[in-house]
Amino acid sequence: MRTEILVKLVVVFVPFSLAAIGGTPSIFASIHHQAVEVQGWVTAREFVELFAVARGAPGPGSMLVTLIGWKAAGFLGALVATLALYLPSSLLTLAFAKVWGRYSGRAWHSAVQHGLAPVGTGLMAAGIFAIFKTAGAGPLSWTVAVGSALLLGLLPRLHPLLLLLAGAVVFVAANSVAALWG
Amino acid sequence: MPNTQQPISDQKQVKLSEIFLVFLRIGAFSFGGGLTGWVYREVVQERRWLAEQEFLSGMAVSQILPGANVTNLSIYIGQKLRGTIGAFAALIGLLLVPFFLVIGFLLVYENVSQVSWVGLATDGVAAAAVGLLMLTTWRTGTQSGRSAPGAIVIVATFVAVGLLQLPLLPSVLCIAPLSIAAAWKRGKNDAN
Image (cartoon, rainbow over all chains, first blue to last red; front, top):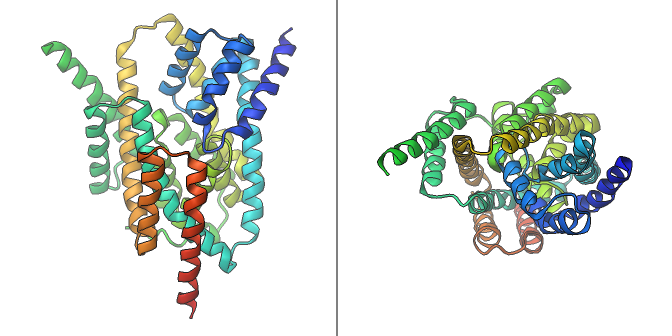
């Protein structure tokens, strides 16, 4: 019975791994469909909770899949689901990177690299927007983000961990103050 | 400002344990998704394992290929440094702590679901991480956007994918070839 679920986890998540073009948010709807309606691993309500927990915990938001595996079949389920989601796409990227590296030094290789660099920067800028949009970020998030960027720009030796900690403190403090007044 | 054009990995081999530990740290504190900025800081700025251009093109490729962007980027960087085993050192390092933490968070959530300050703290950490990403975007933008075509490509990509929310893959497949063609022409002119 348990083995059956583990096999199902692999069968469901391996194709998702290779279908997640442009990143895992593109497959969340299909994961929802499979996990809730087709396989019945979690209820619709649980799915929303798992999504929130995965976003709140460190690691890629797609570790939602780890939690679905956990719900479906305990620790082994979590492990199998995680591997099923990350391994296939990782092997594909690895193969690509290997072939790509072989042509290092050629003129066209360097042109592709130079050409893709500004695309990478543009995607990073777009990512800032996307992260804040899914998180439903308010003025406080933007203030802390811009403040952190300025601070780190002025003090390059500042450790990023301190910055992250400061962000947490500011949020908790701002909310406590707001609660006292309101 | 450190020189981010010449990678150190061309001269000496990076230790596997070092790759693992760097990605372990990144993974453990990667709240809220904005961790590309941190990867850039650790890998390009601090350690100079990769040249800036290698990092940026690797980032674009990681997003084009299927899979989670950050796992793909880790694989790309690890493979660049130490081949297949380096790629897996980076990937396992990245996912190890989050794997246990995400389950731990769920158990805490199910038992004490009303710890409001934990959610707040996480939001704060995420916002600061986005700040790091902003700075990285600014820094890499001043390099890759120095030429006019580069600057146009940055803005076009941001507007298409960020503001207009057009699908990533078709957008990149439209913009990237033009950008590569411009870089190719520029390279030819520089060579002559």
